[in-house]
Amino acid sequence: MKKAPVLAYISLGSNLGNRAYYLQKAIFSLGNVAGEIEAISPVYQTAAWGFDGGDFLNACIALRTELPPEGLLQCLLQIEKAAGRERFASGGYRSRTLDLDLLYYGGEIIRTDTLTVPHPSLEKRRFVLRPLADIAPQFYHPVLRKDHRNLLQECADKNGLERTSIVLYKNRQLFFNVLGFVVIEGNIGAGKTSLARKISEDLNAKLILERFEDNPFLPKFYQDRARYAFPLELSFLADRYQQFIEETRQLDLFKNFVVSDYDIYKSLIFAKITLGQEEFKLYRKFFSVMYREVRKPKLYVYLYQNTGRLLEQIARRGRDYEEGIPAEYLEKIQSGYFDFMKHTPGLNSLIVDAGDLDFVSRPEDYHTILDQMIAHVLLKQG
Image 1 (cartoon, helix red, strand yellow):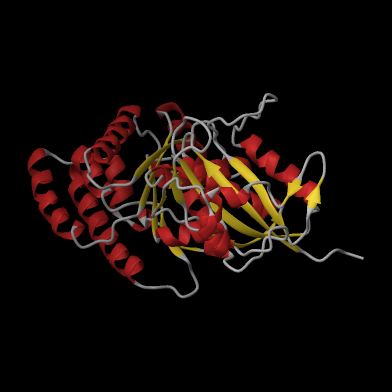
Image 2 (cartoon, rainbow, N blue to C red):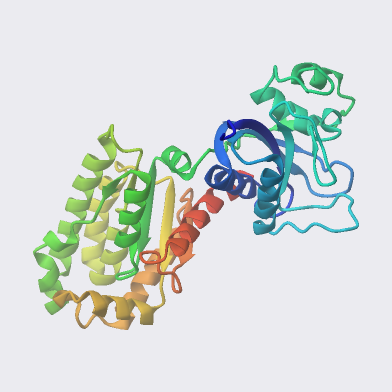
């Protein structure tokens, strides 16, 4: 007979590296391999307990699991190891990237050579009791026969706790929903459209794709740049502005957030390269008026590829009008993007080196990029 799922409580802590990311990644992993995440506490910052070290971020979760206690313990140890946690035979407290402790396994009392549940001394640790009281205030300790509210009141640990603004989520979908609007940018041939499509399909996002193939001036521009540069850039700007105004302001009840394979600022980057000085001055006036009105992304991801790789990928996709694009032109575009990211206050930009990543064919590479995006957002928080 199959055993009914058990509600287990787990504490999470980190005081090394990107602390919030280690906590979030652990929750994603537990949800994928151990069961269903039912509750996540607020995140608290506390001083190191029992040793000198950096401040910890601490939280607790409730996990509905079918794993047996020892199996769940092994799962926690594997997730710690994947996060770079080192355990030492000598014991003692040390700084660590990730600390996962099994606090309760239902109402069971377990005493073995490798596992003690309820976790010993949890009633002495305010950084455990506080988040536990947030998600399970009336849960009774099966040995002490007191709930977490009473245990917290009686706790002799007076170390300070500071509730942070960090919010952790059950899965990637919920994490990206909160971002609302994500832009994937890059040079010609960098793979931004492929990545935006994949994110849209995987995470149920509304997809905005640049409509460059419909521009009648583009093939002419590659044949005669001097003659067609201004009408090309102006038509691109008008179309991008219209698309952004329409697509980013209209709510889609069936999609969770918006992902675009371009940002309207690329108009100015390309125009600065292709237009003469006087034409660019005029163009910039139009651009400035329009740019003030469009929605800005919460996360701006730039896919970096070296020029040689870009030329290979441009040749591989075989668009006639892209034949003969010089390496110097691509390098100027790359420099324009870097200048934009460097000198734009408030732009939450992330550069992803995608040179060795095949995020279309290899799921692990795709998830590597998602993890970099999540880690970047959380690094600013914790």
